[in-house]
Amino acid sequence: MSTDTPRVSALYASKLDGNEIFAWRNLATNLERELAAAREKVAAFMLGRGLATGHGDTIDDLLGELGWQIDELAAAREECDALRVDAERYRWLTSEGTERRWTFWLGRNEPDGYSVWPVFGGDSIDAAIDAARK
Image (tube, rainbow, N blue to C red):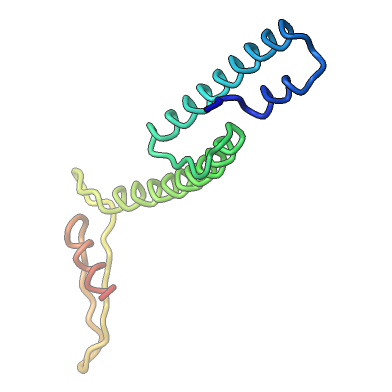
């Protein structure tokens, strides 16, 4: 079984003498081995970081797969950064240091009127928010 690739096989069809064909065949074979090794290296790099390689038959295919995954990760990072800002804002509002930063007032319509009560920081705000969302 021959391991010749189309490039190597094309050398045989050329008008080169035997020594030239042998030299070019060795060069082409070595370059194709190096290219396959580079492709495997890129695929291993991607897989080692939990990224999909898709149908990465070539380095260009792998780079295409890598590109859209990098774009998705960048979008997820932006969303995470926005969520972090929201969480930090919430923690600041609800922190209970030496003095409470805010008092939240919750109100509810009841048969005998409108009831209002204060909700102070920490767990009481979380419980009030959870109850209101239900």
